[in-house]
Image 1 (cartoon, rainbow, N blue to C red):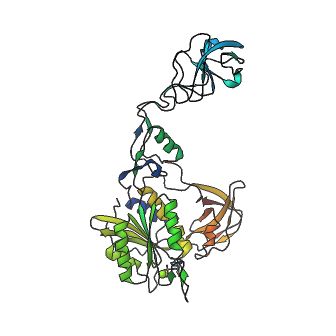
Image 2: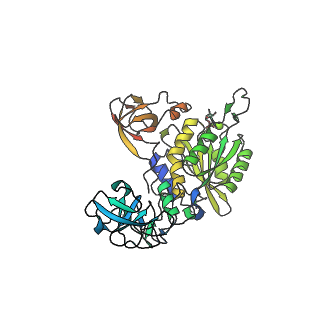
Image 3: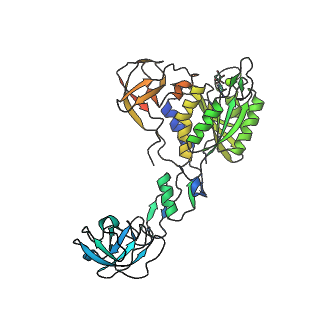
Length: 419
Ligand code: AMP
Ligand code: MG
């Protein structure tokens, strides 16, 4: 549950650094309660409790090859002639044991007959049915899978906190877990604000623009493994905003709005957020994305984190990446919420305001260890994000980063290391 105090409703006037803002945000959110979901709905989620193997996997000794189950002592030298006493397919059980001088045909996955400790693969025999000639000497124990060699009954196979990928879901399936307990994944209400913002299929009138942000942000929510609750476009009035935020509060664990957080005449998000809960701060020393509101909306004894992102499409998506995504991951139970970074040689000189940390959209080439910007970097040029595979992180304190310098990039196409 979010643990934001509703009483600290004071907007800070001093710019926050990215690190300060992020640490305040991460300090204010906490993992959601655990819940049980169908195994197939758990991809990307965090395991809420340890899982032990209820039995050995594989549960019985079985053949790793199509071939002949034999006694290792009979095939230590080749050629060897053995009497074939039957055969056993995967899914059936051997009807008798294998004695000295005998062989039983076995298929991959078939249970090993008693008495046999080795499988000679078909390719190392003459593949006959009555008497088989082993043509290649085979060490004892070869091509047999022991019971429990993958998972031992009773051992903790997956620890609480594990991020579930395809492999873990396979392991859970092997153990018969059709349902699994995961840390809840936040439902995230996504709203756009602005009198000029219209639906995608609307005829665009003078001064109007299509709503890019609800779509990009809802998709970013989904890419973070969370569930977007797509709200509407909210006109620039306090009444409409109040109503929209109240409605979102009842349907989501987190609210993300875009637009209306600057100091324009129609920027109502901050006062309404303050009225319904609290605002922790609203200015960050970055470009793009400087105005940003963070706080909580009250709903009875619930406190729902709210992010008021700026309206410019690059700013909103970038501040989502820097601040909202880590918060959503933390709420989803992840401990590691940071993207991997790399050092790279900058190919084009970048100018920026000295006092702001600048996140240029970049194309990183791992092979050459270089990065170049995607071209025009205006905060409304969404294509700069679309062309990018990284963010070039240019710290405050300097106004120019020269071509040839080594800089740091955030690899936005790569998931954070597993935790
Ligand atoms: P604001 O933060 O509300 O002042 O908006 C800043 C800029 O972003 C303005 O040019 C808006 O028209 C634009 N903008 C705001 N919301 C959206 C949106 N949902 N989709 C595309 N552009 C937007
Ligand atoms: Mg606006």
